[in-house]
Length: 180
Ligand SMILES: CSCCC(=O)/C(O)=C/O
Ligand SMILES: [Fe+2]
Image (cartoon, rainbow, N blue to C red; front, top):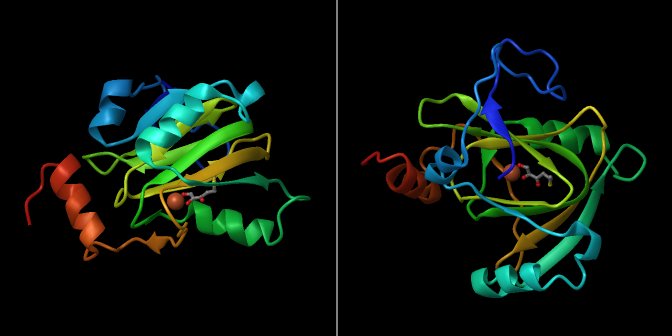
């Protein structure tokens, strides 16, 4: 599993690890309870990787593209990064496979704390529809990511608060044990 920890709410540099002192690790089982799944894959051979092929087949991830997030490679780099780091949710699962570089997905836990998940080359992660989250590069300022989707892709972020969306209610019911 990718390494995860509770974020220091007083952290002022989003692209640094922002760990509490002492560090408070978040184990894989706790991430799974929030609906966050992870695979470690062979990024050296992603075009022919049978393991990736099997995951895509099993979960119906028919769509894929590859994006590079780096100042010289992405139009509207600053605006895009700012929007990725705004707390938001999606109405579909967010499925990302890091082919190079790295970054952090922050997800809200059941107590509304930020859990920081470090993703590096070879990490594939899925965030369930309805989970509040955000993304930042790490201090190397570069990531190359495969985006996957089941069906025709929709990337729309819904900034918090979006508690009235059906997918948010379903997420709260399924993963946070909240009724409503
Ligand atoms: C790391 S892929 C770009 C970020 C993104 O698409 C997203 O929705 C972040 O939460
Ligand atoms: Fe997102």
